[in-house]
Image (tube, rainbow, N blue to C red; front, side):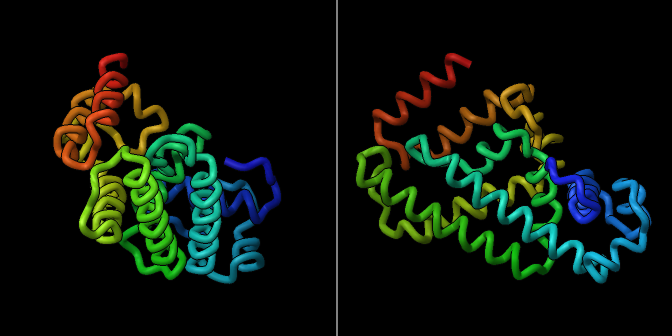
Length: 205
């Protein structure tokens, strides 16, 4: 996940990995995964709560960086950008941390919703999306929908055959049906030209 091999970075990355895998990290399991002394957790982070908050900050920074890389399609997809850069584990981390109280995670979700508002308004102005009465509310709802699907990723895999946190989403067995369903459900958002473009891309997969 990182080329920074300091003990602090190794502890941080070990914690992110454990959370992404669905474990509740402890000082002992984190130190063992990072292959460093357990005392370094107190030295660098004070407590495990401090460790998790530091991980939240790091993940928020990665998401912000991915946002810059994502601004290339008509509607930027930050989560897909994280996958493409080999940081899909961050999605697993978020899937397990989004429901826990954290000012950093709250601020990250707020920022993602605000960014989505801007993306959608620009797409509307460019004629790619149909006009929406309240773009801000729609953007917040779609942000919650996208992040909520990660929180319920185990149920999505069980019911739809797709792991939304997977590194290679395109290789998931249920991806075509999943994308087609989204196109159908959200078809009223898309302009005819964008809908046709997306349908063509789906047929080529």
